[in-house]
Each structure stands twice: as C-alpha cells, then as structure tokens.
Length: 164
Image 1 (cartoon, rainbow, N blue to C red):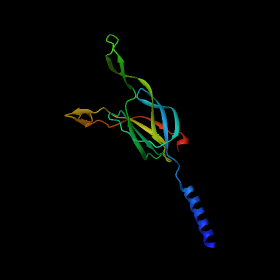
Image 2: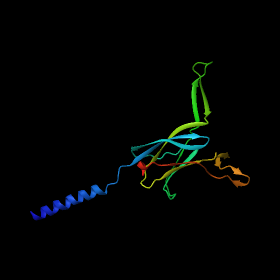
Image 3: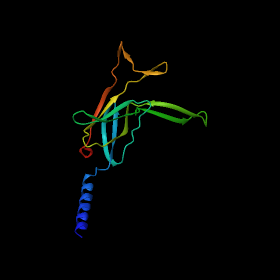
Image 4: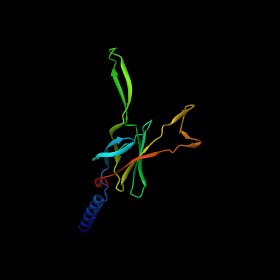
C-alpha cells in the first residue's frame, strides 16, 4: 500500500512538472504595412496562433529580418514588390481577349507575416537591388568597377510588446 502511494505521488509530481515545462504554442505576427517613397511604416499589427511556413519569393524586392534589441537576427525572409500590381482584363475592342498589364504604384499597403520569438524586438526591411542576367546567370549590378551595395535599409518596425 505504501509503495502505491509513493508511486501515485511521483506520478502526480511528474505531471505537474511536465505541464510547467511546456512551451507556449507558436504564434504568427501579422503586420499591415504602408510603403511610401521606398519607406516602410506600420499601419497595424495582429497576433494569431499558428506556425509560419517560410516561403521565398522567386524575384524578391524586399528582405526582412526579425532581430533582437542587440541586433541578433532570429529569422529572415523576402517578399515580392508590393508596389507592382499585375492586372488582367478583357480587351474593350476584342471581347474574349485577355490583356495583361503591370502597374507600378507609388504608395501602397501590404501585409507580411513573421513568427513570434520571445526575444524579438524589431523587423528590419531592406530593398534588394535588381539582378541583371548575364548568359543565364543572375549577377549583382556594378557601380564603377565595384559591386553595388547588396541592400538598402528602407524601414524598421518595432514589434508591439504583445509579441515579445
């Protein structure tokens, strides 16, 4: 009888310990942003449960980094250019014919998703210079005989305290 009570007590202690040691469920931060004259600004932010899948854009325009207050990079990704919109519409003169057009916007709003990290402090945005193709291989443009800077900072968004 005494062995059973010790066993029950140890089992209960292990269950409490495992409950306390569980990590919080993963969360995603939805950032609603505004792009004006190549500067990114925060419009709103929302937190939601879930795990973010990292998907790279084939032709990225922006790099983004989630960093700590000390500048340690926790996560990176890239996004397509939100100022370029691809439109398809029926030709007014030729019913049934679809026309394609790409429109360049000066100011636009867009959203990005980033995972929540306990130490996350900010999200940095960088403009990726356009790549040029040489014999099928993409290369960074040159300024004189020196490679152009790889990225230009276009904004830093401080994460609200609910994401920390």
